[in-house]
Length: 214
Ligand SMILES: N[C@@H](CCC(=O)N[C@@H](CS)C(=O)NCC(=O)O)C(=O)O
Image (cartoon, rainbow, N blue to C red; front, top):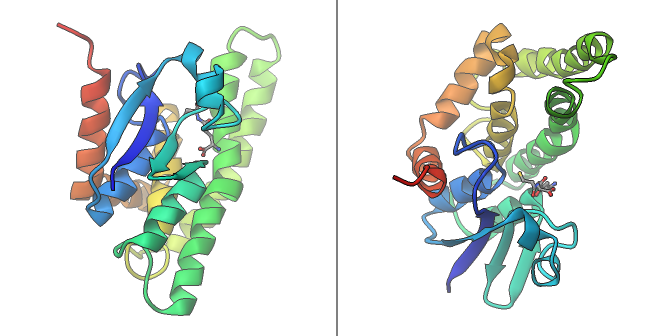
């Protein structure tokens, strides 16, 4: 059964892997499922054909036979449920791994997005100098807690899981800010994620799609 996901036709990050199709590619690579990628332009994303797949006009989407999904949390969860390799067999460990997926998306990602948006959208605003330290404090509050929980462990709860895949994906978005470097254990955690062969394949595939022609 062919799996098709959508991604930016040309990612604004030029292939740094920060667009959210990377986490879906990574999940598919971890479980060994082949997939196709369809590039979508910003314009096409807001047109009816794409809105039928994604009501908010975004990427990525996921199509598999007559199933269409959007939201990376739902997509990665679906992949992890259908294929071995991303969720533990033990019911309680599985529930905890799923908890970490939610924590990544609903507790850790929001302040990181706020930071990205402040940099991108408020760079010319007079209030940025006052606003930025507050935004960074909110990010640090979460990183302090996450770092304390992780301690010296390799992964958040036992072996690598979809919870780690999502958390590493979210933390990667902090790289341009340099804030991750303030937390050696979180930096090492992210590096462990990036070192996984499945992540490398996902990263290379998105890069190949975003390489400048010539
Ligand atoms: N919560 C959504 C967020 C999706 C999202 O923000 N996608 C970005 C790319 S990473 C996008 O399509 N941006 C273009 C837009 O919103 O117009 C998810 O996790 O899938």
